Image 1: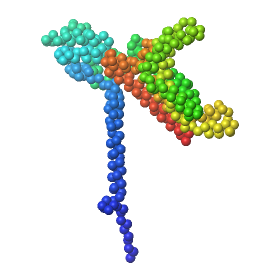
Image 2: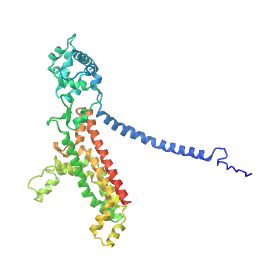
Image 3: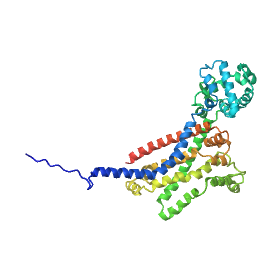
Length: 417
């Protein structure tokens, strides 16, 4: 009979298996790492994720009419929009207007309806004041007599759409569309259709600035990457020097340089290049020049960081095999810099999309970008829905660009590998 030998499980003197103890140590290590990262995670969630999520939510959510006019929106839920509503809807409207007058929320109602029906805000405010004096029905004829606005179906359609807390109005308006008489999506009138031009202007200025920073930054990055360390470090300090200066100061400096009797115009006239001061400020030229100066280091530094990792032996090997200087640079050196070019251009383009200060100070009325209108709706009109919709569109554009960047860099890495 063959004896069977049993190998005991490795363990510690206290009888706990070593595998269990290792698992406990690993869990404790992960918990400790998570505890160290938690403060930063909370900061990101509170200061970054929550505001962006709130902005995206506000672009499609508006419960003003549902909250402040619950009776009217409920009464209109079954209205077919073909004729004026019946007496019950007018009765509900009067009750809502009376409550709004008592609780001083008439202004919020008027403002919300005025977004979709221009000029109706003041009429609604006066109607609420007069409706508060009505004691008994019927209310339909009385309201129409108070203000002919209530004899128009357009205002009732706006209130009916307020039955839902979610709306596509702000996103549609951001693309120069709106709701038509029957609730269909139609193009906005030409006098109100401005946002497609604004987005086109924003993207064209951003592309132009990105291209200029690449044309100016690539040779400088190549020079910094190939010069001796002592000279390269000195030049690098000059490159990053603008980072030590506020963007407001740099923009104001360009305002001084580009103005009608500024340094640049004085030099041009002294050299007899121009006979009169050139228009260099409060137009597209000043905007692009100032933005290019501010964004140049942002494009240059990622390209430089990639170039520093490229060994000179690659180009020397190509030259030794018979390639000319330009062919060796274009076919061997340049493809290896593409990840840096993509990163620098992406950073510059994304930052340019959100520029507000520089176009406002050195640009003209036709040079204001999307961020100007976001600030306008936030600070002046207090229209958080439109501001959120415009911001949400820029965010989606940024995410799409980042996705394309990842695809391109991934392909380049595979090819290089």
